[in-house]
Image: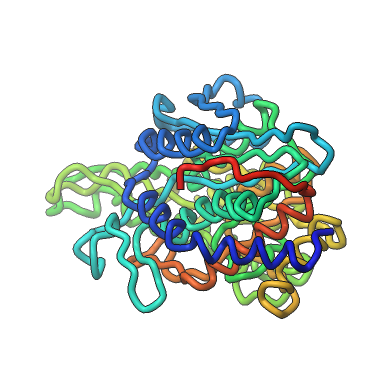
Length: 432
């Protein structure tokens, strides 16, 4: 255990470099790292790792290397620019426990930029918040990982356990980035992921499947609409059937620990729709993209089978006119997980949190996806998802709370010191 005076030095080091940390976070936000455009930000992360003396591993994900794994999400885009970067700190003598500090650089699209109060790529700081797409989800967390380590070094300490800093892609669509890092051989005694989680620890999260539904219609001229069959109208009927399945799954929440008190833990989102060819033709086709969640403990195969059955059975819906919707998987095929209580990693983080915040570490269940499922389900590794306060992630005017970010960085720094162990050492120069 790190003594009180050493902890104070680490905490002060976070404060001393917090302005630099915010500036670096702003650099990250200025990189518009939407899917397929993450190369430049990953080059930046690789430079940061190398300048800190880490062994830096940068590679383009090869779908063939990961597609046979049960946690793989189907890919519908080119992976030519799907680059992962891992920087590994290796102590002179590896006497402490190892750690993965993971984060993702990919962000969701901004939507119409004119609806933002300011440019989503210009990270303004105002009233204690930093604004911008990805500021909360999760570039503030990526920066916190690095600057927590920097604070330990600035306090004159060297961790005695190996630390892998993972900067991955594809978290927002397949989870294949974290999966590829795991299958490349990166494992550790614990994992910490500073996703935006309101200063709390995630106890469980849902599984997620992405899929596209297609409904065929029969075209006709609008003057003879009854001679045709409108595929767009039918698609809405198929959506209604999926909503019924969603409600049935929500009604089962009492059978799933951690979900019983959530009002609506299972959410089916219709995220895109397209159909028809001409305003004056009854549409012959319609497709919509959907995201469905399901409880941990349910396999992705079983959840998908229920979704497919729901769509097959929907032919009895008059709105579908006897048409049978078809569906194909297009991204996430990820099972949920539950973090077991009582691990030494959780106890170590709880102690760090209490030192920083002056209160106990709370945990909660989130109805969203997290890359923690890779390490929990497939590496049997305690994975702590714990990050700062945010608002409007995936929405307009996304923002992250600065004081929360400072405190989370302090908790991570103390966690590194206690989990990995430290010895006295001189400061090894970093770029920041």
